[in-house]
Image (cartoon, rainbow, N blue to C red; front, side, top):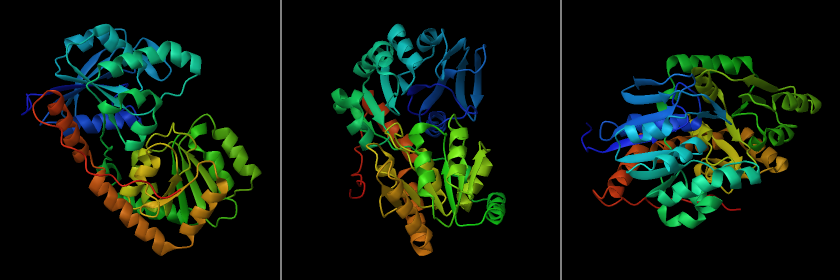
Length: 389
């Protein structure tokens, strides 16, 4: 049993090595909360069997999956496991419709927290009929609702009735994954030799809300090579767009291993996240680039994106969907290496100060103890706001 005697069950979609941003957050929470908190994970398996195992010291239960609903594994035994596994606090990582239904059905006699990672983008009638009732029921039951930024609590429609429950816990980035090891730096040098610089980097799925079509329009006339990491349903259309625009210095790299991503970050001169809707709730890839000392050009969304990348402090922030403004921001950094270096240093310092897994786990531990009545919640320090409009 952990020192505090607090048992926490994190209910997520999946757990690494299954890839995904929320999956990495759950892993970092479980690993860094322990041993002070007895944390474990309850998730879907990718197969039709239930497995209980220990991953890097964390007990993980992967439930048999009988199918999919969207990207979520359908696990009929989840309500039973919610009752079976001992816990003082259950943390539901949302979006996760199966977990919401399971909590409503199981009615566990324990404190419930909801970690609200992002809003759900679904056809309106399906969302109102099939998703929203369960989400509202669990939000009403929750003792606290955790969000990754003040902007998410402020702008998420479903949280407007629950502002008094919301508390901000910024994500932590696993800096070890992106450490400048000799091998990573050697590969970064080869990447720079393979592609005429300077280098602009994008990492993410090729889906509409990422705004890669806007980025391609913004690249016209820039003396740089752009490396696009990731795959998705828009890849063929985006490749055709790049060809039609005559962008000979754009490279679609597809999905690449973690170590290669780390080398790409260290090779890059600029990182860009041109997302166009608040479906981009935070932009963890910004933190990854910032941890590597790379300045970021992102968009002024009503979400946590411009709170993470602060205008003229860690990078530049432009209006979403504005290819001209994005072009100008990229051009500004391309022609000013000293500015890039200064913003990159500030970006790395911000990550080291505000966005570490250790800080994230300390803050969640404070919330668990406050919810269970063991001590008052330690208030968050004042957080700086995004740059001017």
